[in-house]
Length: 317
Image (cartoon, rainbow, N blue to C red; front, top):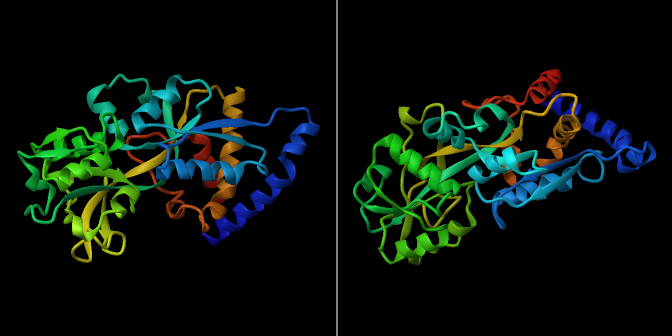
């Protein structure tokens, strides 16, 4: 890994000298530009998108346009149909859902992923006095799965389906769900996102809420990964040292149907080189700590990897 980091730094220096905006201006060529769909305002994905643009713009010769998004499903539609969107942050289980519900969906053949960026943990929030310790205890009860068409709603419903837990899902956003849980109107709240979640971190011990376990089972293999959430992450919500849960890979998805001779494909090539060169810098504070989780050798089942990225990483070995 040290050798790879040295290579990254070398590439960064070369790009900084050869592909600055001034260099493109002198050659009368337009600066390569890519559009990246991030998350909702205030979300971790929105922060990651902004930091990615800040990391590349001004030195790499690639202009990154970051846009606020809504959900993984919406980002997939944007990648397919919205002009100017080349990449976007997507939870990988959206492709599993599409294969189950719409096996002819165009995303299956037209989208790929650049790399897995990090894992988003699935949180199950319940009342401390409910007697619920595990997702299996939710059978026959009402539970908030998140706002309609949100990443939380997709993951929560898919997980309940895979486990065969017959809970009654209601669509509430995270904050409304937490308030309903405090009033004992529902039995639990699902939330998927990188821990710690700002919404959950605001919960106080006097609210009498806790996180329940979501043990990993064979039903999750190839879709989710086993994970833990520690008491250090949520001191008010984890009663022991940690709780068991699962995580979904959050990937940087890309439209994979541009002809190699097209300007859009060449812009993606330029972005890939600049992105690889910027990874050591992205992983340094004060940027979001999830950048440090990038694993260039990880593979995401159910998704094809962008071939140029695969080849570029192979050249680093």
